[in-house]
Image 1 (tube, chains in turn brown, green, red, yellow):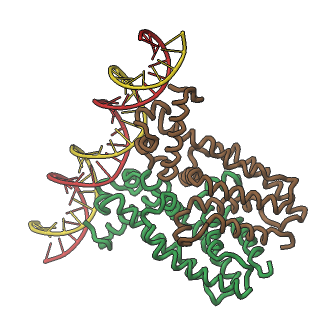
Image 2: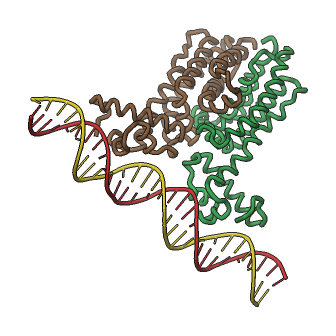
Image 3: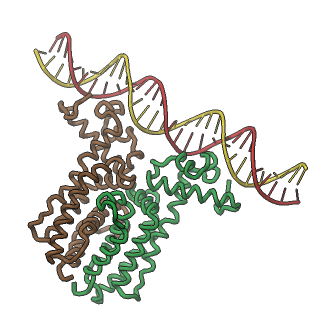
Length: 205
Length: 205
DNA sequence: CTGAATTTTGACTCAATGGTCAATGAATCA
DNA sequence: TGATTCATTGACCATTGAGTCAAAATTCAG
């Protein structure tokens, strides 16, 4: 069995192909909806060969999920208490929206996990997500207290940024069905959300 | 085989029990993740008995989906061009949030469907959702043009209401994990979203 | 070039799952 | 009460899907 760190070129290449294929399939069908055959086919491997690289379906999924939360949280980590409040929050929104645009499959994988009740990430939510969000919510809370932005609940402000940005990845079909052709949902979303938060957060609102 | 309209008391009762159980299971596990055994068990029936009432797993799911879009769109239909702009939009947000609170399983069922690429509702999105949204977007657009609310993209305003309200049903686990105990997410959300849209939509923003 | 290590696969197993069916057990109604 | 329809189920079946394994093919180091 190959080690965690792929050693040979072949292992490197095939592991990547498997994860890429698995991301595609899991994000679209959910964990139970995905089959190893689908993943193997998309990766250009036979099923037994796929199982030579990963011990189980669970393992592939776990590997995919592992990095996910980190990437998802990075933009929030970058929110700087020393910066300009509105600019920081808008910057966070923008980075999150870019994630949705550039990694929609990752977003859907995560959404699937949440819908299923987060059985495989609940721990991580408690141990990593909550502390970070609490920390940044405190930063925002301080801005509010100092009168530098309008009074809002920091936690729910963060939720609203998550919700609005991820919506464009997770509900992509719906968004496009409603807008019709000739639209760039993400570009429009950036303009709209900038206006939304600017209007709402400016002090003395 | 029983007709569409249940005739006897027994058919009435069992059909309902099946749909109720199926909603529970489908919304949590997705279509492929759900099994007839799970549904049958939850409905208190044997699997063959369940299949006496519905011809297939597909049929149960279809029946569930059928009514869904209507219920989902009702709050938007109620948005009144003759009313006060801000009050109408806030009212819509509030009704949508109540749906999320009172029917989270329906919300998740719908979200599952969207994540999967909406294979079973794409037609309905085109034929029913889009026209209605376009109509109401035009109403909001007229309010903007009249200077009665701040200039915003009506379609994306509606998207943001969908996103923020459904988030509390679909990502319930995450919301609760982050907030910790002692919170009423929906009550807090109502306050936050009211402030968000009031601050952002008030004219001369 | 040769032997060892790595990679690939055909042929399996075993459990789960959607669905069928004939037979049995209730209701119901004349 | 007896005949007829409705409801329920145990025993199946076919397929799919996760995972195994020994053997074959390929790669690679010396």
